[in-house]
Image (cartoon, rainbow, N blue to C red; front, side, top):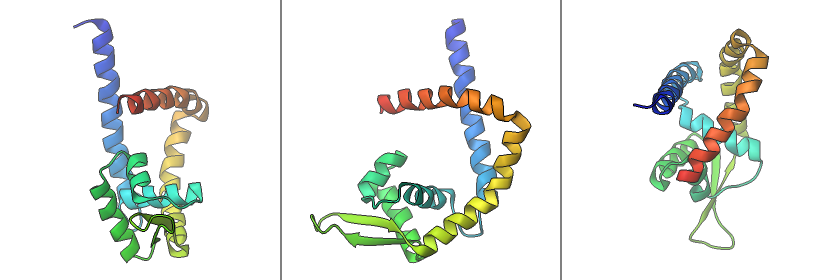
Length: 146
């Protein structure tokens, strides 16, 4: 195995393990009953401030439409999102975050912020800022392969 391949395997091994550990810690820190997928969708809708179709959300999260429909159904049942027909194309639906969804997202952020902040403090803000461009470029290259 070449040194480049060994480096690539080490890099992806660390990313995958960090992802698994981060997901587990975030899930434990979220308010009772909220799943990481629920928080992610609420956070995206709150951050963008615009309605999205389920297909757009599925594409953004790199999941199937069925998986997104399942997540959105749970969020709608909890009163966290509003799903309405698209006025221009009745076959499509549009999703927006509700006031209750904004409150749930804010509560989730409040519950995970201390844990995330502690990790950033331990690593050092300068080091975290320095690695972000590399991680963003890596994500962009991986999205291009999709």
